[in-house]
Image 1 (cartoon, rainbow, N blue to C red):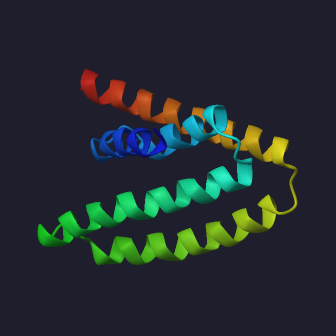
Image 2: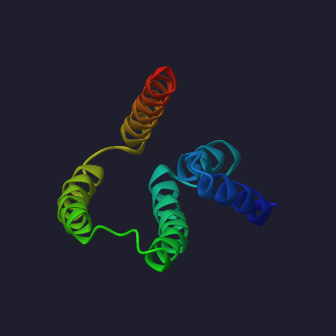
Length: 119
């Protein structure tokens, strides 16, 4: 069952729905994994999903390497800061921060998409 849920969420992710967040919510409410384990699984899920997207974009020659370099630099900095914060927080606080981040990201995406539709 877990495999099929992951495949459905991966398909949704490929369509731009934000499958990694859906997968994390699924794991949170329908598994016995801790919040730290859920985030690690979510990162692995993202690596595989983004790897296939990267391949498609490379084949279509749609990669802007200057932007990629900036994203790598700030992503590395963010991961160092985030991991140092994560080891200092309790699981419950980390879970609430993750949920708040998901709500903020979803709200931002929703507002942005409604503004594009109006234009």
